[in-house]
Image (spheres, rainbow over the protein chains, first blue to last red):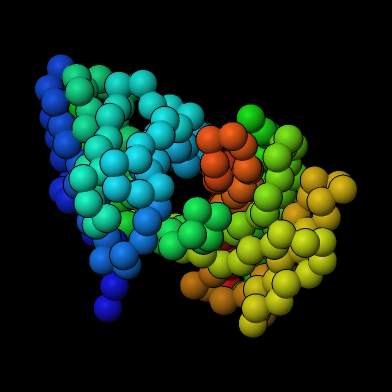
Length: 112
Length: 112
């Protein structure tokens, strides 16, 4: 069965370190998205991609970057982790740009 | 940008009916989604409305009025497993493509 996976599921890192969160989908979807979810804010879009080599900034992109070298993967990099980036991160994908999105299980990141 | 408002919390009794409202303001409305999210899990797609009216899907129905910027999710014959957060998400079409903007979610508690 097709699926979307994220790794690691839990991560603790120190302020200033570079961290990369992986997202892998086997739906063969062109569109992939990264969100963060915090209490009191709901889900907020960080970056998204409509296809290989395409990336776009979302609402809260500062301090994050993504690259899309193939259809299946959209890794999210925190260039220099900050305590404000402690959050739960969800990756999602969709077939067409406007279709419903399928979410991965999430990564809980703690920056100390 | 846009504002999406939904109640923070609701409580209902097993077997009853509950209506979760969502109001929004947007400049490029292109559809409204409802997602369900159980604690510690990923959001899962429930329903989608792009035209005015009611969409029914088993025990769940969703209504949209574009002129009023209003939607609701109706859950019938409530079950304990329906205790979850319900996320209203508005799809907006802009020059940079589609964006899905989420409300903060409504936490529903179903009691015996």
